[in-house]
Image 1: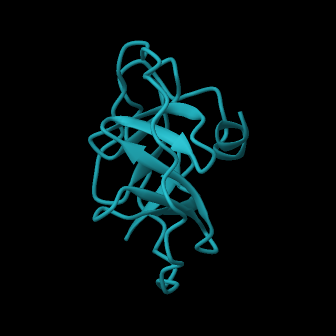
Image 2 (image 1 turned 180 degrees about the horizontal axis):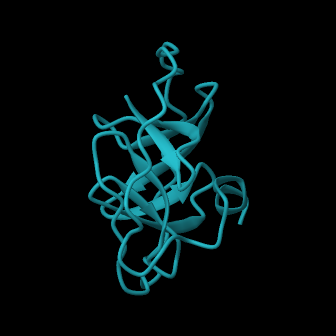
Length: 121
């Protein structure tokens, strides 16, 4: 599990590298990665996942994974809707991560969405 942080270095959730599942801070399943795209647990396209960064549909980072540097991309193209995966088993709760140092702003800037707005869109 890798911790996810927003642009203000607030801990917002967890990303499982092994299966591409996304969990909130309480280990509730909230989404999944399919290729380089991120979907809600209802298979609604949210944006992209590139080099440890979760991107909005405009290609701007909303959150980034610990151990990576926030990256941006050009506007993303909406992919085909993937098959709805089975709900994963709830993983054990990892220890809360330490707050990282604030990264340099990514090329193109940060997303205008907060983490909660992004997940609820």
